[in-house]
Image (cartoon, rainbow, N blue to C red; front, top):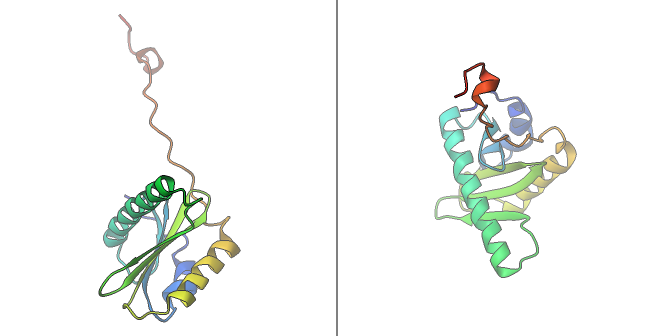
Length: 144
């Protein structure tokens, strides 16, 4: 669970106030929430980030299987809205849900890419490190 929202203000200013955007989240590529717009609560944003990571993983698998040459963005067109996913910085993704199916996808995507290019270095999320189990001797425990 992530409780910080360090760049929420930036997401609000760049995307949250944009006509046609319901909410936006910034997350690590493995789905750990980093920041969110004020239009989405913490719990919902964490679920949204995890689902976004799964969708992106499917897009990467599709790219690999079909020789697409690399995944730039993913778009999910649903009956009630559109989902947009793009790379935002090192190990970082930006995901937007539109407020309806008729939102200006070109304009929203433009703002997403502009934000990623302008401040991608600030949006970089360090990759999670796998837990390294310690040896009993390192914990001060007797070894047998």
